[in-house]
Length: 247
Image (cartoon, one colour):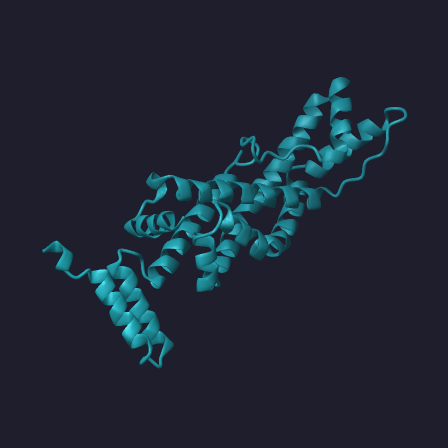
């Protein structure tokens, strides 16, 4: 009768429980637990680690490649860099007196600088992925829909800022952003009774470029968590299918 047929997973579980008391090596215990997971149809710890890292490499790579293209920032309304908040009145005032093209030149040059810097982010993300512990991997895989993005914010923001800042500073000069900004401010300051605005353009664009990068990474993270079609390898399907079952 089927009722008397032994359940393979329960037999293995009993086997594991029996041997856990006699195993002196944590490596042996880990292998036994992995075996039990595999018989239950779940990925092993090594598969979980490899699968998540594969997903993160893919997601960050797509995000970096997308933003580092010409118009990667400028043509993406979600991440497009506009005038600093404290200078919005500057922009509005200049557009109202017929200097909209000058404002457009500023916006274009800010986004070009961000696009130049974005391509340098990939090795920073790769290093952050390589240094992940298995505890990090588990926390991300079974965490919130933005768990990976949060991890990258915590582990790479400082490195990204240090890497981006000199590139953006050079690029702002190369694309004449500092000249356009100076022209904007000179024109604005000629208007009677306006309040002078001082903005560190390099710091502003660096911050906005990094914010945009994390926003794109968050999109890719959500896609692979929610869209089965985005899981483009058997390993990704197995690992994220397991994560789906745990939630």
